[in-house]
Image (cartoon, rainbow, N blue to C red; front, side):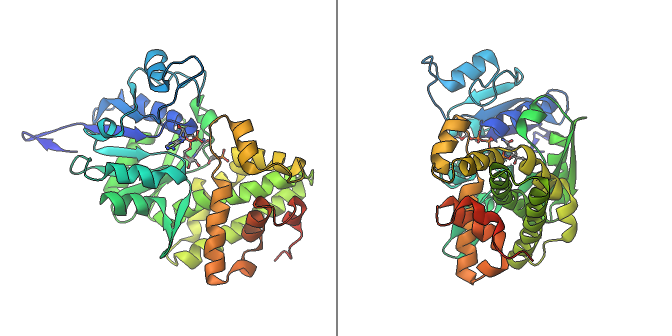
Length: 354
Ligand SMILES: NC(=O)c1ccc[n+]([C@@H]2O[C@H](COP(=O)([O-])OP(=O)(O)OC[C@H]3O[C@@H](n4cnc5c(N)ncnc54)[C@H](O)[C@@H]3O)[C@@H](O)[C@H]2O)c1
Ligand SMILES: O=P(O)(O)OC[C@H](O)CO
């Protein structure tokens, strides 16, 4: 909390992103800021502006109806969620920044924010994904931390946004490095009676779970599209979890086994492989025999929402080829080769299982 004139000022929260999860996260946070004394009521939410078919701007529509009619129709966000199409004005007074955009956009957003943040600001990333740089893989929380020079925790979990929007019970995991007080502050902001948050000192483990499960979800969707049944899907999930753990530990030996038993681990893997967007689009890809691209199916099926699994599979593959690790990770490698049309969808079960 910032000190002003000897008095503690309330925390101000800004949410950077207003897609499906961005809108639900804003709603959840705003329900807490409205009642918790440590936080200013208003939650400012940055909107990547677009014009709706009615001719109205999305941000204006959100502020008028208190609803995101494109990315979360039918759900009231709360009158204290204020949509703002201007990135700089969204963050200027905030000391708690929640990053929740598709991962491919975050680097550009961070560059625009350099020098614009309030002193003492801190961040949390809800973004599932990573970037691959010349020097190697870079987790999104590190990209935010390094670009903006601020502390950044992560929140991942079995969190299909549309279910949390209607307040169905779920859990999440906050990962932090060293600053447990900051992690507890974030947990307070997010915890509700239907959204239980655990705090874990393993930021890389938590973030890699959230990132890699999207690749396994593509594999699960392929299996569904090929009508291979539940045993095959369970096998894919088991192999996927093993590869997620092995890959995480090769990149960051500090990653803990226990993290894979938190909501961010096995629980997120299960929910995504049963009900996520990556699974759904991959199922359609397999049903079309791989003849329609993921980009085409994403645009047709998700109406502006974005898949993370296909680009993450490519990013993981870059790391695997760089290190010569493809044979150690047959599932992760095969998903990418199927996504780019190098292998047919049926190859998802044709590698030698370990
Ligand atoms: N939706 C979920 O159920 C869910 C749950 C947990 C985590 N996540 C993660 O949260 C992150 C954000 O997902 P989401 O569901 O909120 O988004 P989404 O898939 O709904 O993505 C669309 C968002 O991207 C924005 N966008 C489009 N082009 C852009 C550009 N050039 N620059 C900036 N923004 C642009 C759109 O305006 C929109 O807000 C992802 O990493 C996702 O994996 C999603
Ligand atoms: O719909 P997906 O596949 O992007 O997954 C959503 C969430 O990450 C589930 O926790």
